[in-house]
Every structure is written in structure tokens, then in C-alpha cells.
Amino acid sequence: MKRLARKKIVLVIVEGPSDEVALGMALSQVYDKDFIYVHIMHGDITARRGVSSKNIVAKLGNEVTAYAKSQHYKASDFKQIIHIVDTDGAYIPDDNIMEKENYLDIRYENDGIYTNNKASVMTRNQQKRDNLYRLRSCGIIWTIPYSLYYMSCNLDHVLYDKKNSTDKDKENDAYVFAKKYKGKVESFKEFICKSPFSVTGDYKGSWDYIEKDLNSVNRYTNLCICIENELESRMMS
Figure 1 (tube, rainbow, N blue to C red):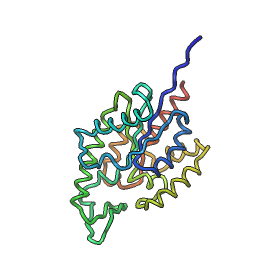
Figure 2: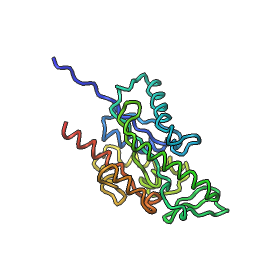
Figure 3: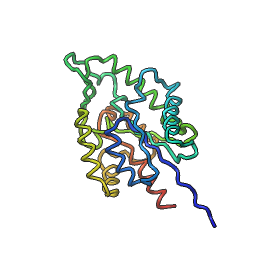
Figure 4: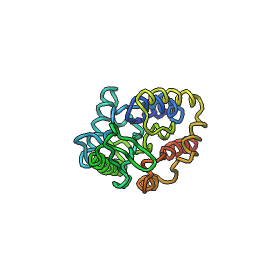
């Protein structure tokens, strides 16, 4: 009797709990729901203190191995890692980072970033650019195929057309989004892959696009490339 190959895990890495709520259900309809797991980073590893292009692959690898150990998995149990990040306007020109003393928080607008500390945002953006380039170029984390996809300027912007959401808004909008697309994989695919914000084509080209001008503070995602690749491979298998 021919032995069936054991299905492998798709690990999706996101920044926060509301990201998991919004995308977990939808992606479980694209991938095998019993073999897709979402890992919450609780923050942006690309902007984390002490993380640089020299150590980010190792630090992300530590996150993956710690998760695997906690679930009693080994590297060979994984099919791939999908990492979803916010661009946070990291690629905009420094001239489009506007300093306003009365701003308590960073605000993202169509013409750039508003902040009470321009120097700090410039430093953060440089760190994010370096780390994003290193991650999207590495291709492998802990011997597992790895790919990096962006939400610009953040996930709330792409999914709900809101740039500067509060944590409560993020939570509420995530549940509404998950409910809207539950059991509607074709509608979800249409939304992610056929909207004005969908950056299609090849993986490298999609990153070249988000680096240009003010694209990284405007509403774009290349997650459609990931989804279309998976659906095409399922049709061929």
C-alpha cells in the first residue's frame, strides 16, 4: 500500500493579535485549515531595539525555533514561513517626514509621516529598510522556505482603509473583517488580489514598487502574490 505523504505546516508570522484575528480565518481557507498556524510577534521585529541587518535572520530564526519547540515540532514539519509586515512608510524620502511639536504619536498621511521627533523616525526608517531588505533576500529561515510580504502603510490601511487606528479600532475591525470573509475564499481572494491596492507580478518587483516615492505610506500589499501562488499550486497538485 502506498503511504500518503504527511502534510506540512504553513507558519504565518504577524505583528499583533488583531492581525491574527483578521487574517487567520481568511488564510485558513486558502491553505489547509488544519495545517496553518499563526504566530504573533507582539511588535515589529524590523524596528526592535538591537535588531540589525546583521542579526535579524538569526533573531527571527530564534522566534521560529522557540515556537516550534513549544509545539513539539521540528524544522522538517514545516512547509514554509509566510511573514507579514507593515511598511510604516519606511521608504519615503526624509523630506516627507514632517516634525510637529504638538503631535504625541506618529501619524501616517498620504503626503508622509507627521511626528514630534523627525530624527527618531528617520533612524527607525533606515533600520526597517535595512532589515526588510535582509529578510526578503534570505529565502530560508531555520532551513524552512521563507518569504516576506508587506501591508502598507499597515494592515489596517490595506484591509479597512484606515491608517491611524487605535488598538480598540484594530480589534473591532479585525472581527468584522474575519466575519465578512468567513466561508468566502473567492471573495477574499478577489479583495486581496484584484483591488487597486494589489501589487501583482513577481516578488522582487513588488518590493521594488513599494520602495518608490511615497508608496510605502500609501495603500498597497503584495500578499496577493503569496495567495495566487498557493492556489495555483493546489490546482496543479
